[in-house]
Image 1 (cartoon, rainbow, N blue to C red):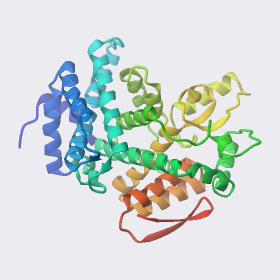
Image 2: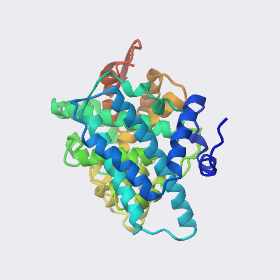
Image 3: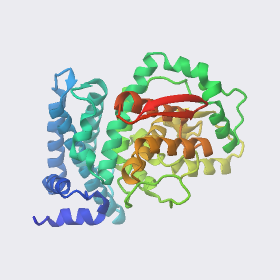
Image 4: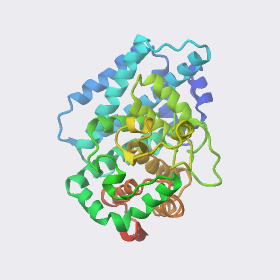
Length: 398
């Protein structure tokens, strides 16, 4: 058995749940980590930059299997780099030596954000050479917290692209027409939970500026946030809001690191910090912010349930930030299917029964979008399943 370097050994002592149970996958990932962990920050930046150049000059009008496999390797390497930086962040924080003006760290942060954004755009705009081809790569098969994040990364970019295409086909208009019989009861529950007063309960009164396409800059923030959202997680599986689960504070820790390393990218930091809120059934930054604002001003009025703009969360103009609500849905789904070994069918039933019907925790529109994405994009070969959800019949294949 190959002896690991001292830095790699220390890395795995901290990130015990980043070791795949599959020995072949573990060996490959160790080799990738060993290649990176001894690089200086400048060397890592140069190494990442060559990937940006490679993707920038990718000219095919579709995403081929070879490039998709390279992208999965990039995502794995980015995940390792972020965790190495997190370890340095913790040491410097403990020693009170954090430096927000560190030139090399600033450069690395910018280059990583550029690469992640480039990957997200390619996945978003290119047709795949073969359906579901990312599922065949080791980085997505890995049963680690990194594998979890990479699977979510691919699914969330695909789901956002699916959502935008549906909006181009008039989905927002259909949502407005169907709102009373589909989503009204969920927004009413949210109003009651937060003691909100809203005389007009419509789609457009609940979503600031209405349901619309997710723009490229927001897609980039979502993509970066996904890769940062469980860096400090030190458990085998991610938190889901059920009675048997003990709340932890990893999303708050992730928020602190994201604020530092992403250098003012508040959209990313908020996506990271809000992904376990579940309309106050979970925990996170918003719950504490909400309590603090009400202590200062008991008459403060929240105007919207959902906003596409992170600034509306900080000012408490909106209850939730759309990217974080999307992450919540897919985060739970992957935890249920991979860690808790539920079939896709069982996972969707569990989510709709426990996190929408019993209590409102997930965003119902984003849950709908994800279900339709599973049906139309993933096209898995399970038996047809009919679910009564949002007061009308959904038929989908999973």
